[in-house]
Image (cartoon, rainbow, N blue to C red; front, side, top):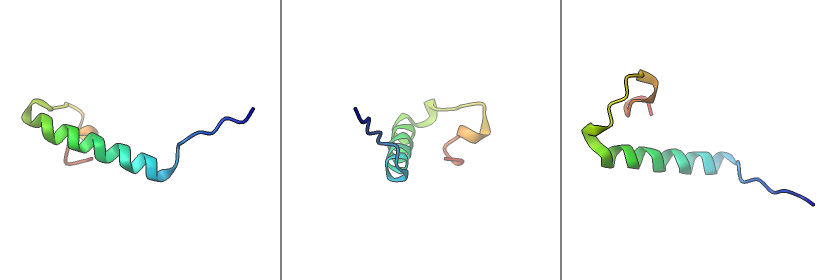
Length: 42
């Protein structure tokens, strides 16, 4: 049985865009302490 995994670069980009949209929707309530996951870093 062959398992097909959808882990392509395009899928990762799409998921990141979805994450950024969600963060923008949340607005100022999204305020992580770690700089690498702040909106400006995404």
